[in-house]
Image (cartoon, rainbow, N blue to C red; front, side):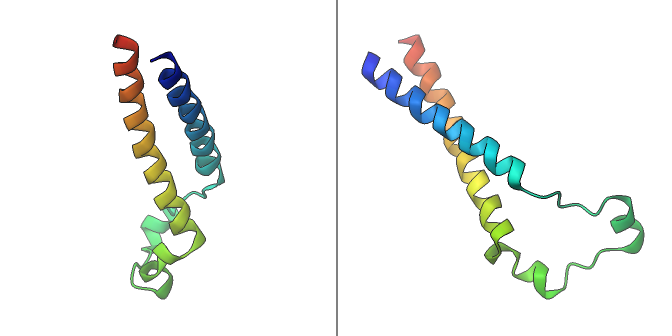
Amino acid sequence: MEIVKYIVMAIYAIICLALIVLVLKQSKEDGGASGTIVGASANNFYEKNKGKTTEGKMKRATIALMIVFAVLTIALGIIYLV
């Protein structure tokens, strides 16, 4: 069981570092107060195809890593209780 614990901890550390890097590489999405006043349109070509851009792929990867992070956190909690 000790080997499994160390393997899960190593994967956990790698996921943590990857998640930190992805979050820091992403740009700020909201337009702030100026976007609210001007009224940013969501019907342009970029908004419709946002998932296919690099930003969209990074956002999906971040969400996937967050899910893996949460599952590994629960798994480590269970492993340490046993």
